[in-house]
Image 1 (tube, rainbow over the protein chains, first blue to last red):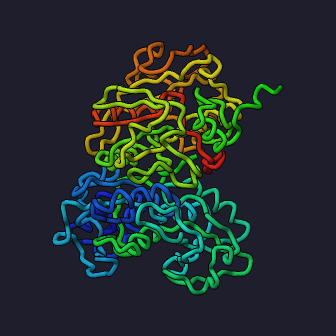
Image 2: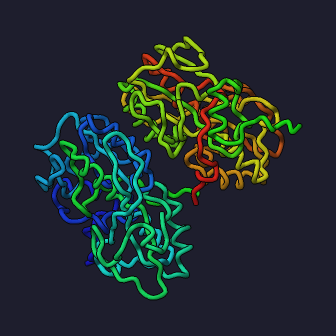
Image 3: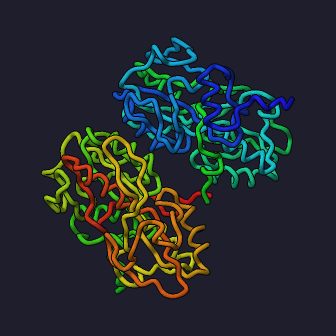
Length: 266
Length: 266
């Protein structure tokens, strides 16, 4: 039997498998080629300033869609017949910046004033890198991408402010230009790198000690390449101690109906 | 004397000339190479849904910045020491969808709940077309670009819904591909065309009768090329009869500190 035959192959099939609890784990590898999204769910009272923050910081916070208050469906162009309360395999609930629950659905947490943000995720550009022959170290290592807080402030909006968080992928020197070209075509999922080499210029003193994720080795002949990271909006919202914020659990994303290639520009 | 010596050459100089009433006319040709922005100013009560509409329709409604309610300065990265109440040469004020005033500054109209949207403007990509050797017919004709309502609905958000409006530029057949490549690099100012040739497929029955702007001739050997148009968000907001909406007067834009080339991706 084909070992992948039970893996949902479309966004819609992935959401149905997750909603029915047939799929409960991380979503990497699910519905290959379909865009997966980070979720950030905030009360309406904070949502407008949070959206302004995202607009002002599009590289770390690429907004794919924003729902009306209380609506549990994104725009139909992103996902038909979706239910944002059940269609991620696992969620995290934060009150006043503290993790208080990690439910598999949001039934009891849902409120009529909640606004859901779908934010771009690096899965799309990592698949494009691999397809272009650029190796992605943390995928080869089977670990999380290393992420670092930088000394670069985001553009503030209302109560939301904080440093840019970056992810780092070591790239062979002769493939750095290709990595730039491939990822710059995907502004909806962080776009091209914000910084290449010289981690100290970003305020990163030790690549072996990331602030989030796992360290990966940088080999001789490789450059550390830094992309704006989707942890930024979560970290900023938590630091601002929003009274309630709900996210997907790390790696347990919302799978959309759109294809990676639809996000390419240029 | 150099006839251009009195024309402000930077975004800041342009804003100062406009604020002091040394410059009172349209802004085309002012501060060459600096990004100019469309303005849409709405009460906070409508602003969140309007921003969601823009996020869902990024080609016609590319959001450059959104202010806090009552703030008359955009993000400092867009314009330092700006005053959105005075720094466009002329404004239009609409109440319940009807034009009621065309002031040169917003002193008496300003309210503490007004949110200002800076939206991308096609000046940036037209300069890129000309620099790439692609002629722009309405510039040669010295008239407005022709614009058409289409049969394509925008993705709705809250009360905001309506058809996509497009602008049309006739392009010689051998330069259409170049026009695509040049403009696709500028997603923040409408990006690549939404449609090339076949106006009837967009529901446009007569190119000689645009819904906005002026007709321009399409010559033998040219294709009509259609881009999403910044008139879309204004038309949609007016059709929804927002109790108050303020825009720049046509052609009388807000000049920023950012350079066209900073908006290029890929």
